[in-house]
Length: 319
Ligand code: ADP
Ligand code: F6P
Image (tube, helix red, strand yellow):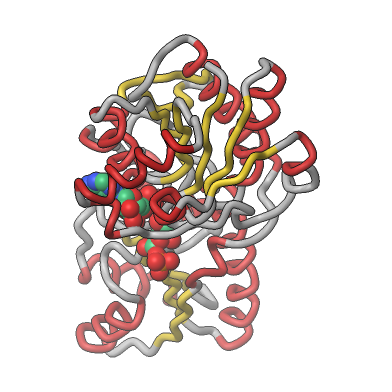
């Protein structure tokens, strides 16, 4: 193999730059050229492709966002869009593609692989929602951003003896909310993986208050409902006044944590190795602290399990 491509796609995630850097440096180390595709699949269709050398990925390991930019590209879901992408890659002598993104991006990568164009998926999303890997690039950084926010909100919640509802991203997955809730000492965590009982939540809020708790923090995953809708529920069923904080896209930014940089470096390098071994249609992941590769189909068709023992523990610790 002489030349490969790399792109970042879907929602950006801190650590994507570190992954691209690892792909470029690892490939060049093995005398393989790397072409960077800008703006995800849209850039592939439009031919926004340039050669990346060792220097072009210098000084990015610590940067959030993605230097290659990202996009959501409806045209790529069509056969015609995929064919345009393949034509562009042929034109640029690209023999294989590494896609850093979430499960939607993996579906795109698999579509190309099925058309005879080998792709490898590297999990880059703050949602930590890709089956087959314990962690995705960006999750740890986003988690730390959420924790920082919770700590700050806790200060004002205590001063005013208030109940706060904090809405956390994650699309349909509750990992970010669950981990943030446990690490942030939240009284209540509401995630899509566990049906919530409003009476139980009200009971816990009241009993906390009765034993002198000065504030309450409730973390709601966006996949369940908006924090505002949840505030309405508490008002309607318990006449409880709350304040709402929607963290939003702040969760996607910032310099990647050390953990995300390491994960991204390991994953990016492994993706190149897997291509060198002659494979396509695989996803890279981490299982029990080991880097693994597995069928990309499993990564978007498999079911991801959330650690419900953490959910149970969070309830026990927040009595
Ligand atoms: P993420 O990769 O973070 O899950 P999206 O779900 O938005 O983000 O997917 C990113 C891009 O991947 C989409 O804009 C589209 O171009 C491509 N994609 C998503 N689903 C498919 C599919 N079923 N077939 C082909 N391409 C897809
Ligand atoms: O997949 C990452 C993510 O940030 C989700 O947590 C969130 O639901 C979604 O992307 C937001 O997408 P957008 O940036 O298009 O608003």
